[in-house]
Image (tube, rainbow, N blue to C red):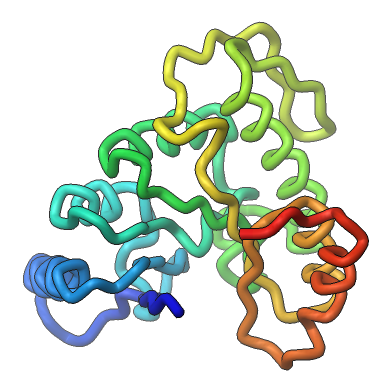
Length: 213
């Protein structure tokens, strides 16, 4: 059995510089204690999270740790340029020497999406379009993608992930649709919901869609 940590990095009243320094000391201690992983959430315009740009913070985490896996749980894909995020993922994977996990999602808070002028009603299709483009870019020498929301033509992929072919993809959800969707694609599945929510992933595993962690 492996034990990991999931962190909001919430505002606890300290000065932000002190809060971040203390948190990095905590993560360093967790790494030394043998914890398997450290994942952080992404939230915007809320004291629930003071690292709304997870890649910057994870770059510091990568340099303070040696063995623990790490990653965003999750990147809110409708808020990103897929090309820009491909490059960030590759940099973080190299900084951590292959210890990066990549959590992806569309965002559960309509308020936070609206702050970024993203329509919650269409965020699912934007998310899937962005994820397809990101996977294409991470696995090919050139990025070619024709989607409803994102289009790229013959973009050189100068950066490659450290891990081959790509870092592990994690998908959080607490409903049956999300569970089945993750299982069919072989993603690592994370849930805070009832056990029943994971049943479609179990069925997908039995049917051969998912090959195991």
